[in-house]
Amino acid sequence: MSFYNFAKGLLNIVFKGFYKIKYVGTENIPESPFLLCSNHVSYCDPILVALPIKQEMHFMAKYELFKIPLLNVIIKKLGAFPVKRGHANVESIDTAISLLKEGNSLVIFPEGTRSKSGKPQKPKSGAALVAHRADIQILPVAIKMQNRKLFRSLVTITYGKPIAPQELNIDHQTSNALKDASQIIMGRILDMFYDNDVQGKEE
Image 1 (cartoon, rainbow, N blue to C red):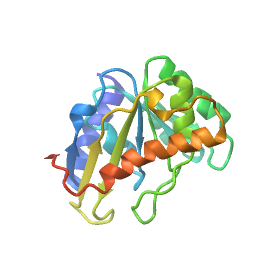
Image 2: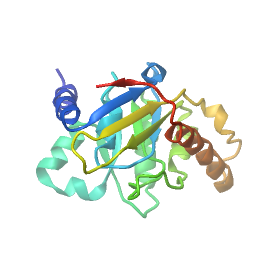
Image 3: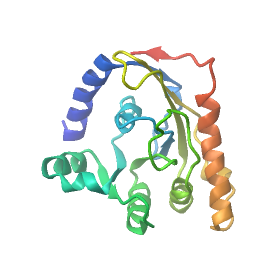
C-alpha cells in the first residue's frame, strides 16, 4: 500500500468522525485524468474532495508549508507541490500542466484562497489556463459546510458532470478569454453550491 492510500484511509476515518459528510454525484468522477476545480471553504478541502476518488490526486499547497521539515515530507508524499500566493507562479503552473499531461489528476481551487464567509468568491484565471494548456477535462465540485467550527457539522460535496476543454471556448489565450473560461468553471460550481435539492449519500 502506498503512503498516499494509507494516509487517505486514516484521514477518511478521522474526517468522518468529525464531520457528517454527504457525497453527491460521485458517479460523475472520471476514470481518466482530470482537473478538479472546487470552491474553497476550509483547510480540509483538499482531503474532503479526494476521499471518494480512487486515483491519487495532486495538489497545490502554499509555499510556506514546505518550510516546515516534517510537514514538508508528508505533503510531498501526498502529492502536493508549492505555490507562492500573489506571484506569477510560472513554475507552479508549468508543474501542474506537466502532471496532467503525464496522466495524473490534480486539484485546483479557482478562487485562489479560502472564503472566510463560506460563500464562493470570484475566480482567478489559473485553473482555466492549466485546463486549456493541458487540454484536460474539468471536474467541477461544490463544497457546502454548515459550520466549520461545529463538531459533526454537515458537509455536502457535490461532483458535477465533467467539462470538456473545448467548452471553455478559449480560441486564443488572451486574458479576456481566460477570464470568461474561469467564469464558466465557477458558474458550474455555483449552480451546485446554490442547489438546495441535491440528494446524496451521507457517510
